[in-house]
Length: 368
Image (cartoon, rainbow, N blue to C red):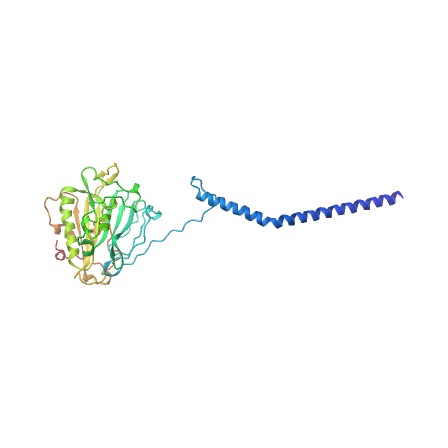
């Protein structure tokens, strides 16, 4: 009897245990199902909240950075401009007002295939290349190019400036603006403050002369950018021999309809002479200045230089020591072939015009 009672008690315990396990299993299932049915909205809400916080962090002006990882920005390729007909160049896209990564690395900003541009030397952290378009002068239906400058941050002045010369730039319609100002395409900390003259009695020498751009006020004002300046001895050079040279080039540009291409540069045989801006910033003083000119021989072809044979073009270079010239106006004493100037300065000219006759010099062609 006791054995039967024990067996019945054991069976009852087993039934109770099994029913309890089944209940717990069903409860967990129901709980998980309920939780799962609401998990999507809970997760989405949390994810949305994190994204919102991340966006707030990015927009927060308190200076705290967002924890959200941003993909690296892709480097923009250099724009490849195409020269337009009759020597005028295509407009360049607007450039940033602060130096880009390419500028800081000394790379080209808008360096294009314009005919007279010297070779890019890619001096990282030093040379900047900037192109300015005329804000109020059209050529071929688009903004005419004013000039391209190679500016040295370390020297604090222009190394060279390349510019087209044509009647449309030189024909006088406006007065000199005297609008001295920082170049808006270069950081202020990379330019000297030339709102007044250099110290040690050096004048603010234009590389593209104010007289080269007197058809519109906007193009003239751009010649007063501080990146277009280089220290020059005033008496006997800036107001003497060099000024005379500039006028002769302007007269030549007025004579014929074909574009005259000009590179004006500063050469440093050494860096023993320097000056400062009004705030004491170092600026190197060049030992020499030069000009390189190229044009069609007839001056009336109506074609790009790229379409001409070497014998249909003339080019020459002039190298002047940076010193006072007392009444001297004989520029033929300083003429040489472009190839010879390349050997002296280390520059390479007309790299986009491989058929340029750089080794040839016809002194009689240049009536200076």
